[in-house]
Image 1: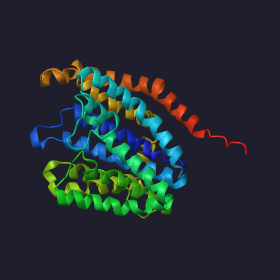
Image 2: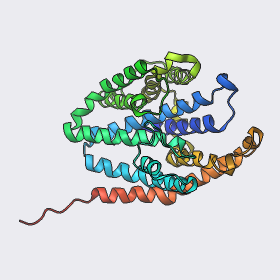
Image 3: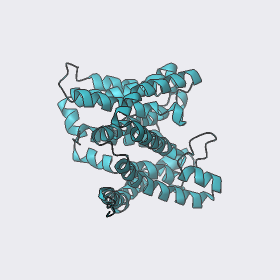
Image 4: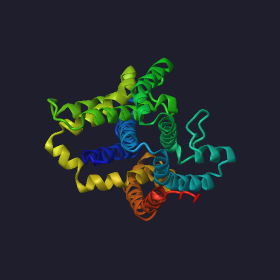
Length: 323
């Protein structure tokens, strides 16, 4: 599968926006930007997930390989984090089961303290299972229903007044918009477009605006603004943006982004995130340093070996019994 270098920068940007939205002071009250910046980061993250997963399934509609790779990419760190949270919070069996089986985001939400942000992993895993069933039953041609499903989810959000939600049926259109982008990319590729190079930035600004509570109904278009920003950058980004987003620092942050996401919420629930506002922000440099250090160690010493193990298992084939 051809690597699209600029996507590394988008993944790095998505996690940096989430960290900024959750950990930095970005304005007071309803005029603050914390919620909008964090939600923008999540919208970009989901767009990239939908794009890459759909691109994989288009090129290789092998459900077994897909599930094994996703299992070894997401589950080991997620379960390790959930086990630590379960022990620390003394969670009851029903809450532990809901988290370990990735449905803790569904009502009634049963996310653990320090793991409230892991709702997004539930949405991700549920999408993986859904697309695996779709391709398993219909083959790669089944992916053609994803754009229609994306619009249907947005319509449901509008009918239910869900501008921003952690429930899968009210949030998965952000992933499905990325899936739709993958289908368009598969059809049209990176052919030159007569689009202005500032278009990705306008769409990114609209994504931020649509993620702010003050803009109301504009929030229903957030998945499409995020997918548009990422998609137009592939074919119409300025040279400096391509260089920055494909740089080694961007690629490194992209590589550790999953661990950064998992650890930042967990560590925020410890002493590193405790105290009144002044004390909490005084600790922020240390929280950032510990988060990045933990993410680096997790990625290089734990996640990458697990990913390689998954690839080795996926490449194996059960031998055909002799007749």
